[in-house]
Image (cartoon, rainbow, N blue to C red; front, side):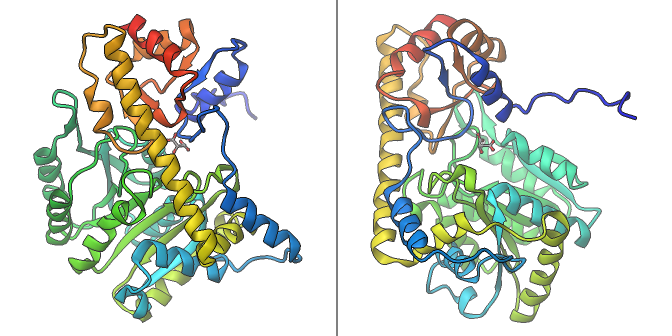
Length: 397
Ligand code: LMR
């Protein structure tokens, strides 16, 4: 029965973890997957998470099934974080939010809902985008194309070309946008450029699907979420936001995320929510309890919330220090190529401009793992591994 089953290719990001785990070199460095490590190279357990878990353990409760759309207090806390506590769309009950299995789960539930609603729609992702965007929307049954984004020559965004591509898209096209900290390039567009993107979304009746997996890793929670306010202020009636707490709470393995769909009215919200629940029920029935309880407890407890914001700021600042250090050390190592762009990029990643053969050499000869596209995770650099990484990059250049 399985004789015709072909071996699938390794996942371009998570597959690297498997290869890294099997590598026996003691000084190997994993800059592949988007995971934040502290300066000692350890995955942090945030103090706010630990405190929330202690509270939850002390008042331990039995684990019945959650509602299909998740813990109500969690969904509400996500809404306040994403849209703002005083947001008119929340006061008017115009947002359907569901607890999802990470940001990926939010994207998938949204994709399944959209496929049912408008099966003929096309999806556009940025060129390049997170590798899983194309795979996920293709698997949901969509034809996936790209809009221009990365400008390799000038190290930035080809904004005019991006806008032209959006303006040329057919009405109803689903456009996947990175709300902040673009993955993989690290280059974001400016608020003024977002205004033009939003105008194109409105004028061409596009369906904006914002992926917000790195809120707080660019310039701050509010700053990174500002694009949502721009969509609301422009009066875009319908748009999607996938949220992830994997990175911002260092809760990767708990799969805590959400999908929020902005609707035109309270009645529309109820109907959309009912359809999202069908997508969930037919995929995995209902979500797990622990991670969402932790996040809701932190977001709803003022002292823990303040602690989370401090801890997130600490992660953000350390990444920025690593960016500066990496750029400086590459100069000091005699690398002629200008790597000054590293400090202009935002979030966990740097699109280094290294080629696939150079990335392969980094991995094979030096045990430095990055994605074949040239993406490296700056959030996994630290004061102990950076010299090794710099020497390896200098060697392959
Ligand atoms: C990444 O891009 O490395 C992260 O979003 C992790 C993942 O699931 O790919």
